Image (cartoon, rainbow over the protein chains, first blue to last red):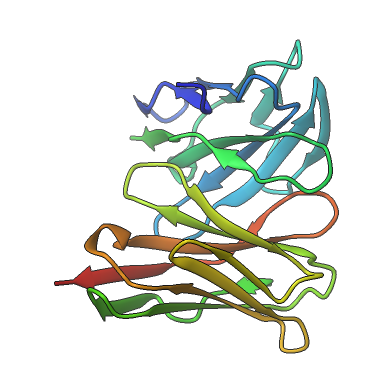
Length: 114
Length: 111
């Protein structure tokens, strides 16, 4: 399977703990995106990379959130000092940046903060 | 400020009939529109897209119509099948490729 891969798929953590999610994009895709989705809402943009450069960050991405894509391949999203409001599905997506291209999503990582 | 709106939270359609899902947007800079389908606990799956230079795009049972003057697009599914039951999201982007999503419409196709 050569789609977007995310892990872990599910994470339950205690408030105040740090969590990290990993995303492996489709291999030839040079753009990688992180979105967050809560119940009853559509996915909300968090940030995106072109190769290893982080080009845009949403205001939703507080200082407790950090995303990296060190070699322009996989990416990590870390949440420090988790809060209950961080409970959501975190979605990774990728696209090939030549003109306007479709963005393909992974299956998501569910975070529950207790 | 909800730039992409899906005003119908749910839609129920009989198998074999047409499903029409609607989406409105407010940002005139949007020039690329997509529809995604989502099952519970899974990521969105791309269905069909349309550029603002077109007013219609068709792919099998799925057709998307774009009315730029009304800032409105719709997804038609003909004929509807039970496997189409899912939440459908409309998304739009300007030149940054950042997608802005609507809140989704839950489609249920019954036999």
